[in-house]
Image (cartoon, rainbow, N blue to C red; front, side, top):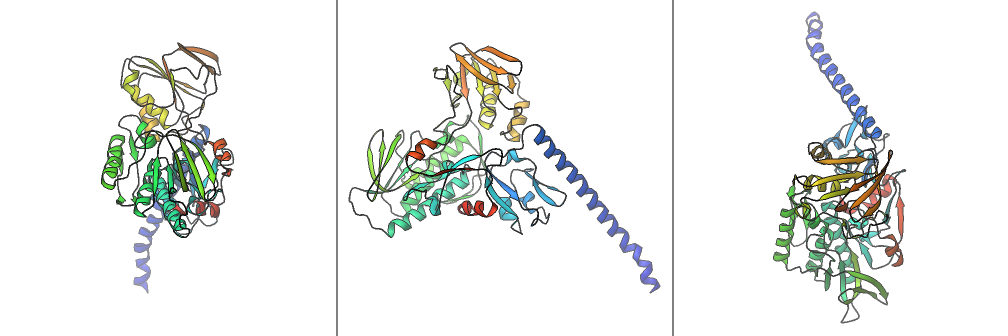
Length: 447
């Protein structure tokens, strides 16, 4: 017994040191995460841009699995023994945190109490409130390439199953018209080929959808996804040019032939299906899948002079603005990336105007790159109020300022074409943070 008692300090001391070290680490981590959350709230970075997790503290056990699973880093962190969204602005809706949680404490939601997001109401197979009319990808709220691919593929599986239960009655009627050929539309088109459907795929632009208009060399972060006819795709971090080359290779290998530069003007309902009216043709189809993004409906400023030819809504080739006085309006990734790309031309004078007090929708990497880039004049808490042929007038807390200007690039994002969807009969609702159970049902296709 004496020997046993004597050994107690030998074992107890390392154990106490280990417990003390863990407690200190836990306290420092909690203090750091609380400070980061407080900083983000103070600087206007407390609102997630779209899909994001909500944590049920009653079910969270503080294991940190969600923190480790998130590929964006620091989006989630432990505060005390509860996982917390400490950098909401950086969340892009991967959903890996939900999948990693061992207790089911995490749900994925759209919008918050203070920032609502308009989304079409979707049922199984991403079918809208109009029977036979489906939506996939960014228009339905899923902007990540992986999620868009998954939703496009799964929508086609549902559409093919539904069509098989109801044979075609007209020889001139297609099985499907796909509108939009970004990642969701591409996946849907490949799935349609795999199922042997008679279809056409239309796009108002060119290969790659919105990706084609990213600044030259932009890195596109993608997670593994499953493409019909191709298999699992693991691109990781890839440049815009690399991603476009990948999509072209997919077209060459599969025979998918989208009809580019064909804009859909209307979708009419008829017995047994739809009539899709474009600027080039009319297509009768049993089903329609809307897979276009929101970029086709750019958010306008609503100020005098916005219709001048010098105003555009995306940056395609930074070189065309070399030597000009360029104003960029916006505070998200596209705005910062455009400013950084233009700064590669030293003779170009760049003004970045953002209505917020911080770049709350930009990724950490872009904010850091902006801070390291010279030659960009920033106006925060400001907004354009008028545009003239040779100037732009902005307003901030100190008054109005006329800034000499040759070109304006508005990077204010896209808007849901709510009026058009409503005319089609599609129900749209504003999300302000769904209950976890409802959000999980809405996101089941992206698991």
